[in-house]
Image 1 (tube, rainbow, N blue to C red):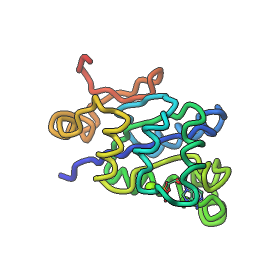
Image 2: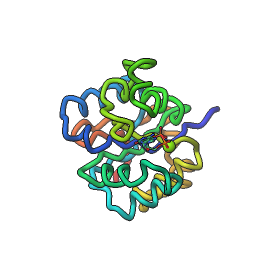
Image 3: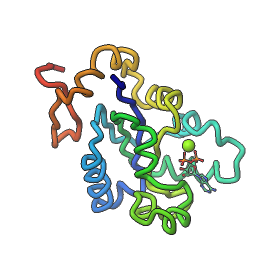
Image 4: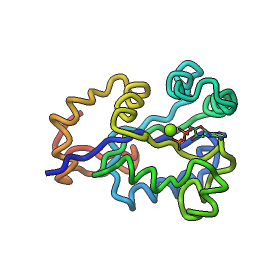
Length: 175
Ligand code: ADP
Ligand code: MG
């Protein structure tokens, strides 16, 4: 039995300004059989952006990254799948947009990236990052409890999709 992994995905502000891009990316997510555990639309505060991107502090692109990420609403999701972290990064494509366009033109960044900063989407890079990043955006989410109680339902596909919320819910569970 291989447990599912959780990853944190963000559709960045320039994507949300483009309903066609947003729809296409969500379609790709569902086609790729990710389960959406949580979704939140939020304009990221400067404080959260600084915490989230702390590892990049001091880099030449840090300031423009913060101003871009706080410039309008983003959609933030907790997604579950076997090997969710690498699958989502694979679907997103390379960080740098010119590279994405040449090497993975059908990837999310290849299709919808505008620049190295405005590269359409975020994905956690390890289970430790996923746990940390989920804690920043979903402080009410109990990560360990999810693996103890909910993971098996998602793994066994004992869930249904709620299109109006764009999330999967466990069958017969009232929340
Ligand atoms: P990833 O998002 O693929 O994990 P990084 O963690 O290295 O990539 O960078 C975080 C974010 O910072 C990127 O998604 C992108 O928005 C921005 N970024 C990274 N490198 C550059 C760069 N060279 N120029 C401008 N922005 C960058
Ligand atoms: Mg990263």
